[in-house]
Length: 149
Image 1 (cartoon, rainbow, N blue to C red):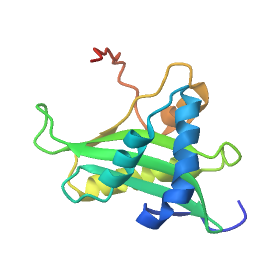
Image 2 (cartoon, rainbow, N blue to C red):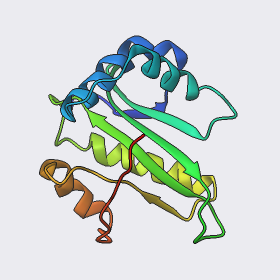
Image 3 (cartoon, rainbow, N blue to C red):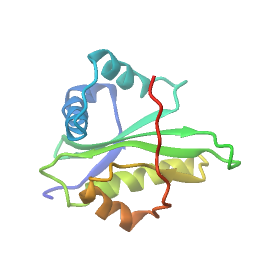
Image 4 (cartoon, helix red, strand yellow):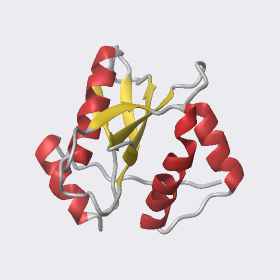
C-alpha cells in the first residue's frame, strides 16, 4: 500500500464512498436490499440510541474497507458481546492487511466498551476470508440456523 492506512469511525459525509463498499459487500453475498433499508442502516450508525457502529479503512483519502458491529447483552456473560456483522474490503486491496486492521479496530472498540468477546459468521464458501479469520480468532464449531419472517 502506498500510504498510511487509517481506520476510523464512519462519518455522515462518508456516504458517497461508503455506498459502493456496502453494495460490493451485498453483491459478494449475492444479496440486494431496498434503498430504504440501506438508508435506515446508514442512519442507525449515527443514532446515539442504537447499538450499531461502523468503522472504515481509508487510504489516500479513499475508503477501501468497512466494518459494521453492534454491542449486545448475553444470557451467558456479565459483560456485553460484540457482533461483527459486516466486513468488506475493496477487492483490489485484499490481502494487504486491511481486513485484519478492521477486525483489530473492532476488537479494540469492544474491549473499550467493556465487551467480553467479539464474534462473527461467514459463509462456508468464503474460504479467502476464513484464511484470515483462522489466524485472528478461534473457530468454535457452532452452526447457524434461521427462521425468516
